[in-house]
Length: 270
Ligand code: PEP
Ligand code: MN
Image 1 (cartoon, helix red, strand yellow):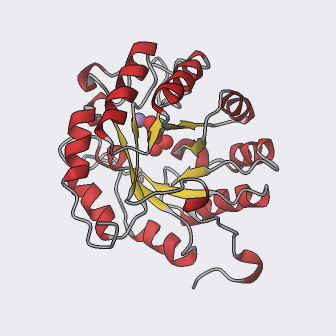
Image 2: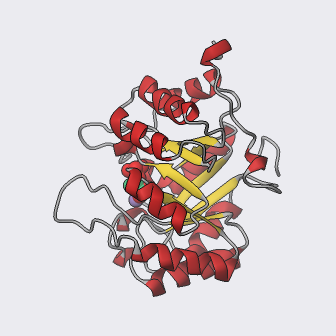
């Protein structure tokens, strides 16, 4: 049952924040911004492929366990601003609290996303929504870690309640216990149900965090295209094996371009 009446969120068409998108949206870039050289080089190589619309990079990293790299912090926003100036690409960053929102907007970040570990927490999502009151910046909401569709919808509703219409969802898979093919179970039925209830909501697949390895990325990307997703978010790094986070799942910009080239677009755009 699609949401109706007061439950129906106002969702702006993606063309209002990404004009001229002629193909599935591709968001790519490193899991984490590490050094200025890494950000600039990755961004330049991605721009040179001509296949990437938005550069992503984590500045503040919500690590599951302590004593891992927790993000470079605001200095990384300077590098992203420079990368944007040099290549003309739009920039997307994860935000998890009010301070992140203020810093990201100060440095001209174009698109914000809420990570899976934040979507689970209504207090955090509300804090972000409050910080964005009256600022209609595009916000992409990753699914919560756990397979709870209502939490995902609740986060979208909180942002909508703050006046944000440039909304999208990112499907990054759901936590599971034990070894499986995937780092996070895709559970396609959840994004499909979300899309049924909010048909206007752009749905973006994040194969990197679903797969947790490079080998399965093309398969999951294709599956998302077959399900008519609006786009993909795929992590890329100039030297994936040396990445400071999520090394196993990142690909070089060259391999990223191959994956995008290999997609069969049966649902238009092609
Ligand atoms: C990320 O995009 O690097 C990230 C931390 O993802 P998630 O919130 O999906 O785990
Ligand atoms: Mn990552």
